[in-house]
Structure formats: structure tokens, C-alpha cells
Length: 120
Image (spheres, rainbow, N blue to C red):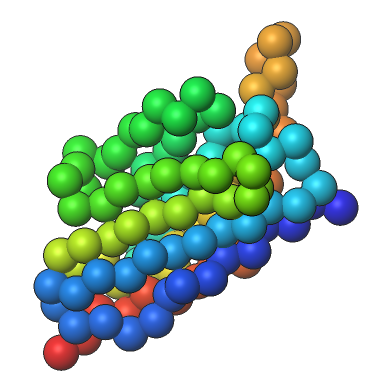
């Protein structure tokens, strides 16, 4: 059974930092494209950052320079370091794991989400 378990969310003041963690089980972690997505109330889920098995990172344009994604294949974990948090960064952050088969099909898994609240 595949599980993605996020942690590290919480309440932070504007300008503060948080580090989210996601630990995966039940998958060949090193083969998966890992990502962080977020969803604010009343808005659609959006991509924050992804990192490939080769550790190539991709970020939403608006977040470049503030957020950093990383992974540790030995620990089956992916991280999101968030600095300079703003009110608009608040929402539920989801961990995502995707495996792309050579014929184009995908296996796609989501964590349960962790809440990030930015408030003064």
C-alpha cells in the first residue's frame, strides 16, 4: 500500500520559514517524480515544485528564490524549504509522487496534506 505522509506545517508569521517533509512508503521512491502542490480555500490546487529522480527541480515562477525542494532517496523523503512566507502562501500543501511508464501511463499518488497558515 502506497503512503505519502506530510509533516512540518503550522502557523508562521509573514517573513518566516517552514520546512515541510514527506515520507513515502510502498513505492520505489528513487524512480518517482516527487512534487509539492498547494491549495488555498476557494482556489484550485497548484504546483509548487517538483523534483525528478535525477534531482532536477522545477518551480512555479512566482515561488522561485523563496522555496527550495530537495529529496533524500535513502530516506524515501522529499522536502520543501519555504522562506519569506507571505499571506498568499497559506493553504494545504500536498505531497505528490508520479511514475511515468515508457508507454505514457502514470501512477499518481497524493498525501493527505499539511496545513500552512501565515498570520501576524
